[in-house]
Structures are given as structure tokens and as C-alpha cells.
Image 1 (cartoon, rainbow, N blue to C red):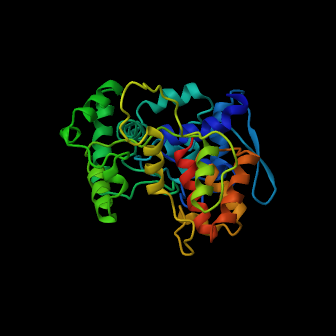
Image 2: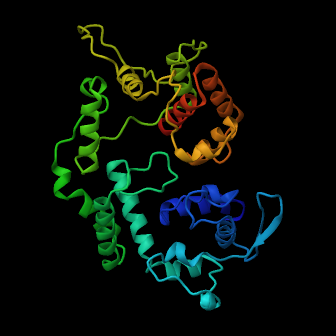
Image 3: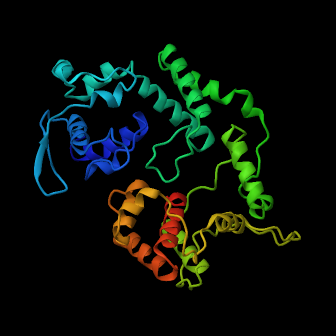
Length: 338
């Protein structure tokens, strides 16, 4: 992967290890004790492709080198902890070919693939990393289901087609979908009705995905408008051109753009919430608003946010009553944008 080894490490961590490794790029993970900065860089060195170590910088400024290897407990989490005196007996995995050879029997890989498949069908995973702002609440029932499907996947030699069949043909998939996101019923539903619908989704009623992700700048403009500001002249990114037949009587149904905006408006965090909750509790450990903004971008997968994107976060803070409210709105934009 060469220079892309760092990005690839983060992607593989999320997709095939079910771990959020983004924080460990710059420091030890503040929540997940399994993820240390040095181990992140040894893993990245595996994918670098030259068989050499990678230099990285510790938070205190010291330079260190990480030799290619992968932490044993990341891939084989179900195996007993290796005693320190036996650590030298663990084979070093120095390249991706060696990793692939040994990884095929990993229960953690099977669990991660189950989570990815479930997300592809339902729009959310069965279990999520604690550091992810949108991670679902932990449920023993969901974790047991994930482990059951993972064991079945291992027994069938990673039959991915079979996995999707097991999920898609399960009895809960035949349940009626509740509260379609773009419907009037969902837009004007009470908090109790929304909570009940979310519970039904979590117990595997048919999940209706939200609208296709939209442009960051367009969502930022909507947020500024709903905060009481004005939008500078420009195209409405949510509007979609459509052919009009003048020979027909036009029924006053809301357009697709209006329905999307209505759906977005129903989930938009209020601009004046002095005591609004942060989108992720670990943000409380960061004192500076700009650093909180950066870490939200990192959590959303933006490793190098642009000046325009960072400037948008500053604009949100100017029209909100608190840092908390601005950060909630920024996360709303990030999770709904491309």
C-alpha cells in the first residue's frame, strides 16, 4: 500500500477487525485499552509493503520506529492471553500474505464480516465500537446473535453468499417496516412513537434506510438557515429537476426535495441547547473546540478535513448557543453527507 498503508490500516481495523483504530494513529486509544499507538504503527508497517519499519511520533514528540507485525489479541481475541515469558514464541507476521494465511481461522474476522453484512442490509451493525458516536447500545441478545452467525460462517468456510441468505430469509425480515423516514407519519411522530419504532428496528423489523447521503456544503447551508441565518445565493443541492407535463393537473404533493428536507429537519439538533449532550462522551476529555471538531471529522472517516469543512464548523459555532449544540449539528452534517 505504500503511503496508503495508514488509511488502509484504519479501514481494515473497522471492516475486518471490528475495531476503531483511528485514535491510535496519534496516541493510545482513550477508551479501548486493546489499541495502543505503537501497535497501530506495527500493523501499518505490515501493509506498507517494503518489509521495513515505519517511523511515527509519540505525543511527547519522541520519534520511534515500528517493525512490521500485528498484535496477536487483535486477530485471535478468543484465545487465552499469552504469558509474557511465551511472548517470544508468537510468530511475527511481517506481510499481508502471512496475515491472510493465519487469519482464515479467526473468530474475530467472522464476527466483523457478520457486522458488515448486517449493516449492508439493515443500515446499522449488531455491535459497534464504544468510541463511535453512532454505535448502537450494547445488547447481549444482539451480541449472541452476532456470535451465532459468526460460528456458522466459520463452519461454512466463510460462505459470504450463505451469510446474506441467512440474514435476508430470517423470519424478522418478513415483518412490516415501521415509520418510513420520508413519510409524514415519521416527520410528525411523537418522541414515544419514534422510540417505539427505533426499538422495533433494533429487534430486526425491516429497516428502512435514510435518504442518499447529500453534499456537505448543502447540509451546512441548511443548518445555517435553521439556526436563523441566511443562505448565500447558490444552487439548492437538495432540489432535483423534473419534467413537467402542462396538460395534466398538478396535485400539490410535496416534491422529493421537500420530503428529504422534512426528514432532515426532524432529526436536526436544535441550535439553542445550552445543555445539549455531546455526540460522543469522549469529547469531554478534549478542552479545545477546534480539537473536538477535528476528532469528530476523524471519527467520521475524514482523515484530512479541508479548510472549507473546518470553516463550516466555525460558522456553526457562531450561530449556536454552545459548543455542545454546534458539535451535535456538525455530527448531524457528517453522518448525512457524502
